[in-house]
Image (cartoon, rainbow over all chains, first blue to last red; front, top):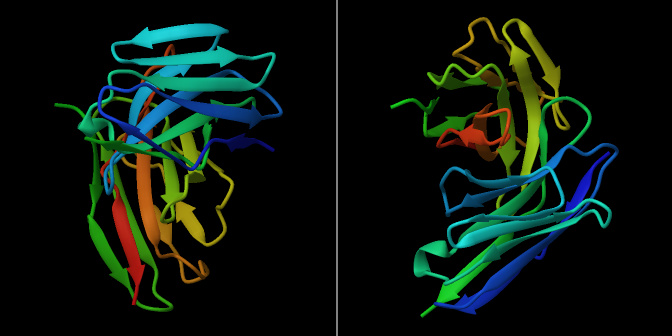
Length: 110
Length: 113
């Protein structure tokens, strides 16, 4: 089976930097994805890491270390609109499907 | 614009009833997925389909059924065998093989009354 662990909640102020860690256990691994979900809304795709290292997309960056079964999402220059839940998801060996973590709720304060 | 349409947005079910949630996409994506989300929780996979006329069980398939007769459509039926169906249901399709991003619909919130 597969399991993912991420913190349940993080609070920060506008302009700050937040790092959301994700550790995973999986029988096979092809990549780690990150999704953002605002309350009551649909998840939206943020990033995907298949190889070790850092991927940067604007204010958001994602990192993967396959040897440590670990990744993180870095949110920089936080804005109020970044208040949302963030999910890591593993693409495993069994079919082209994603297994999601429990989500990290990020609260941005003025 | 292309996207995924889920309907209805809200659905109320009586005990013992079967209900069907609609999911339609015009993205020309091959793979489609159904997830269930409970309050404050992550997404759990119910069923998925990689091609027309084929689908596989996910992690929590009991009490649910699906069909994939057309590439664009992947309806989910919540049967009376599902004892705790109240949840937020999300349909998704696979966006891009390289980045492996899913596109999600806006969801259906199902409540048992």
